[in-house]
Image 1 (cartoon, rainbow, N blue to C red):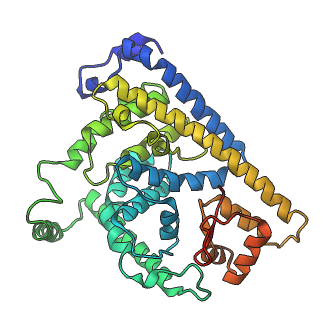
Image 2 (tube, rainbow, N blue to C red; image 1 turned 60 degrees about the horizontal axis):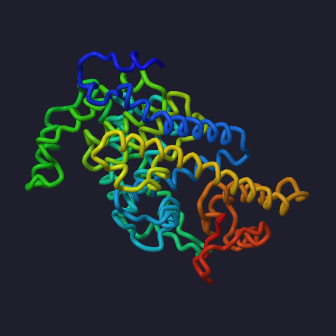
Image 3 (tube, helix red, strand yellow; image 1 turned 30 degrees about the vertical axis):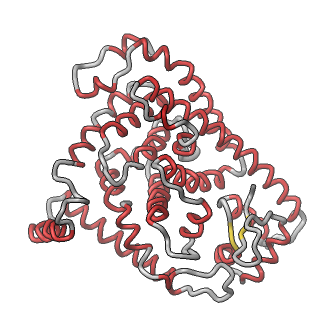
Length: 391
């Protein structure tokens, strides 16, 4: 694309996020490396037999990376157990936020490529994937927790939690439809505003001067500028705008997920949802939060390159592990559970006996026997509450 076509933009809000010819020349080496890395990773995941497992594992690592970038530490193992409703202890606030990131990534991945950037998509992500909702749903009672080595786990607790989540989702969806169609009753709106005032008298959770709708509209106005640039360059422009505007006070992590969705919508990474935070945490804080705009953009491009390189290494590890596991169950009967176990292990950073038993619909004792047969490494070093994974 000629430099003149990039520089000649109408005088508007997007001018502050424009890129001139000099800056583009400085970004070209990092841009070329990021473009090449993403293209290689996308092609590799698309053709690899472990592509689906890699795509599912990336959700967990990116959720933990989002909290890392925000200055919080969440262990991937705790996130896996929390997602399986098998917490060994009450989940922390950071773990609940990480699970919200995980659920948001899955919702974006199951939707249309450009769904997350529409009005309905942003409304759904901001309304149904908030950290407050996750806290209310996932810390109700320890009754839903399942002991990893308990042979007769309580199945009513997790089932009840899932049904409650579905009912809440249907109620929120109907509310959003009523709001967009103008059918929301005035008394309900007044009750909501009154509740907010009573629950937050000091204005700590809500700020009248922080108009999230206006800030989201301001950020969406940068989309035409990003669409006129190459996909990777447009993605970092959107992320920089999100980082500067800060549309959502309590869901700032959504920006990295929208970057991955934008790369998918532009066809740059179509085989999976790219783990942007997984690469961003490898960049020094001083560079990604620098005052100089060119330094920040280079840091974001470097994050994409590092994330793609880490993804290629992960594909190699998973491919090698799959080959080793195939040697274990080659020649077995056709109804053997070992192939399904191998696919499940490849789709999670770690697995426990209770998780395997629930997924394969077998007993915990049978799950332990299958684990011994497939030869996966135990990573906890414990006699109880053991877990296995690919290291």
